[in-house]
Image 1 (cartoon, one colour):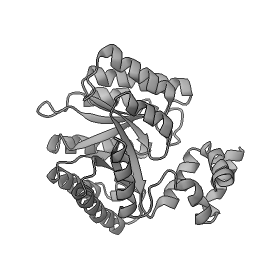
Image 2 (cartoon, one colour):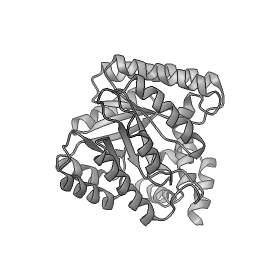
Image 3 (cartoon, helix red, strand yellow):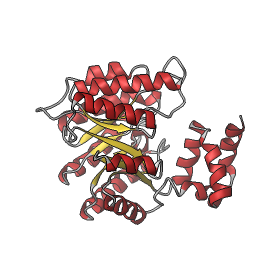
Length: 303
């Protein structure tokens, strides 16, 4: 209850106060900030996926602005030789306003990435978006099989069936490329598994299926139990290290991340930046109030 009260109050606090916590998990506001963070990660032997903050926009004009920004980001980061790729959220391109315009915007971004021999992953958002994002991925994957991927969320009850439905759509032998995460959005129990044990069980079941179907998997987790179980599965199935990677968020569990890299596994870090960092931070707090206790620690022991 206290965490929820704190999380609900934080959006009304001064931005400078919230930044004390947020700066550990967000690279900054500008492209230059993002480039700097990505270079540092590359120097540590870590690849990146770059994310411009901003979601659930309200106007088509914002969608067009985001399309232009993403194309500039792809130009800048590929020219700078950053070892990594790009992630985007369909709601920042107009998914909940006009589905066709959203598709056209995202296709423009993926086309630019393909020109640069890069890759774009479509982030999965809350349950109201899942069907449309699945449909969008199916269409784009047929046109740009080596340049587009999707996120799937283990806590959704539908995910295993979605993976089964998608398992045969690959083009010219190009493996399907997914990021597997637990899922963070608040959903009713009819839609999502709720307990830690259930979510972990289905995460590992999904991962096992993806390996068996020869899908490329981004194993996205900060949970040491899941990391250990995934590593064990990789060893038991003798999965080639070019067929998967581990993924983590910028600034989260750096010690665990370092240990995975030292074991020789490929690691990719999700690097968010942009002027919408305040909205991003406060939305994430409402979705996961437990984080509030870490904010208080950051304010009083790090600030």
